[in-house]
Length: 480
Ligand SMILES: Nc1ncnc2c1ncn2[C@@H]1O[C@H](COP(=O)(O)OP(=O)(O)O)[C@@H](O)[C@H]1O
Ligand SMILES: O=P(O)(O)O[C@H]1O[C@H](CO)[C@@H](O[C@H]2O[C@H](CO)[C@@H](O)[C@H](O)[C@H]2O)[C@H](O)[C@H]1O
Image (tube, rainbow, N blue to C red; front, side, top):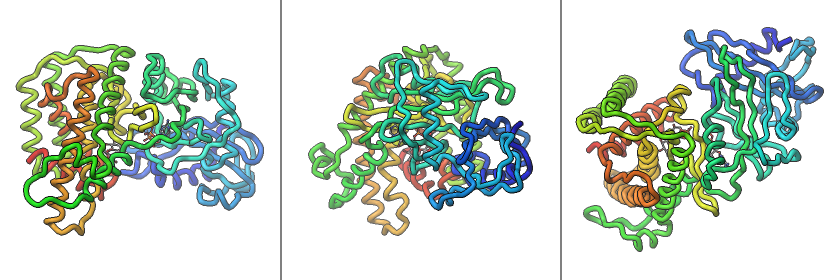
């Protein structure tokens, strides 16, 4: 018997919209039903896996939640309480009185997930998998990472990270698909997959299973690429400012600033090319005709129209952006496309002792599963990372509204120099390691960069309005 009853639904309807990973914040929930309910642990505390069917604007989205139930809630779990069920409320077929809470915060309830994977268990519609040839330790508790975003990640000791996909789509999740494929290619730039969880076919009537979670090797002592780059920018901006025109940045200047990133940017470029090579080997390559390229440019223009309608701040740059798109369409040539990362930026890479590692092959949130898996030109990823250098360079100054204009202007010159230096180093590393040379495809890279900037302006306006000046400032420079 599925968990039912108005009170559980009422509790979840109030809780869901407040979750960071809930994608339906634009409008009210019309109806919420429970698609599947699986009891993973009986007794107290109890653990229940639910797929929620959320009906909004005529469409249905599916979200995964793990609920804990306890008769007495310890203080350490009070902040994640969802509510209380009383009077023998039916829950997974059991009369249940007690507190219902977000189980990802309860180490006692996250530990069983590893045990199920180690045993390759099937529990109701849930199938737990261990990757071939790997062991899974079962003595570790999982705790959620502080930076909860589109998904929830649990860290188990310093051994594993388990990403629970929140919004579910039928079919294998691209992150699992790509990581397994790259692992089979022997790629040194992705963490090893240890296990995964899937839901049997049937979600939304689909014939394929659904990926629920991915367990990977935890990269201990790794530094997040975004933070690493920002440390360098901070040092670079703190140098005494030079009056007059943009100073030429030499390696010794940058090194004197204490945090030159160029050698790292070059290594990151090389790692990116190696991953692209392995993706092409694993998934194959496809040819696109000049007509296909013109269609793609048409889609970029339509994207710009939609974003211009929603975010007026982009309108002053629309003409310059269209000119770049038109240049590619006018000189359209056949291109070779392949599986790519799809949402490549400094927050998706980590520097370990062994080199750069690439994470999160899910593609841009908001795109359909088919779009996320569609082949694209590898220079799209290069353009994504070039945008990220622009972001890192300007992040500290674009958000400081108290800077006097002349200080802001001199810092902008300095930020520009940092971005140019690291963009060039990244492109050099990419081309030297066998990727298509970005300097030989300048118009295409520029078009991809502008298309990404359009996406970012929409993303920031919707999700982080205080960040909007960051892509706008860089657009003012690139489109100027
Ligand atoms: N294998 C790993 N080892 C260490 N940290 C990781 C690993 N995978 C992800 N992370 C950390 O978790 C963050 C979010 O991971 P990501 O896969 O990008 O999830 P999301 O899709 O929720 O953005 C990363 O930015 C990184 O800091
Ligand atoms: O990491 P996600 O897959 O959730 O990607 C989304 O969020 C990113 C921000 O967290 C966003 O990236 C933008 O901001 C980054 C700095 O925080 C910057 O390095 C990127 O260049 C910029 O695009 C990403 O676009 C979005 O899809």
